[in-house]
Image 1 (cartoon, helix red, strand yellow):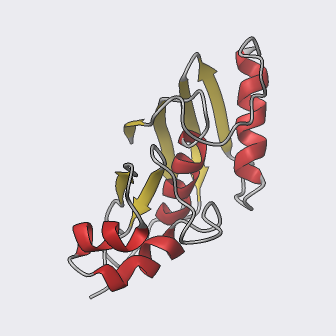
Image 2 (cartoon, one colour; image 1 turned 60 degrees about the vertical axis):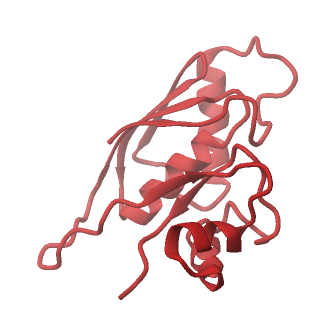
Length: 155
């Protein structure tokens, strides 16, 4: 839990041309945006205060939690996501899943370059791509300022 920073002027444009939308309308748009990727938002609450989104509630897995955070943060006009989401069903016997890393795409980045940097192996780009589905539809379509989930490699 905590604050995750994003680039305010990068991301999906869901607010339209008018920045005058009320915070409640922005929250509803963000919630609909998250839901369109197939995430269950029934236990998620979205609050918007200027360029900050606060997410509260619960989800089923750490993987879905991280994907919801980056989906909410990769919206033009949002620079911070305050994460207060809890995982409903943490593993009982197995050790808890480690927190995922986040990576902000820089100009000139591509998934294999990022994989080389974080894993030491450019061929592991598909691990990053799979972890960011359904937000990423093509491994060649990333943009500067986009925040990606970087999962740990399976041993």
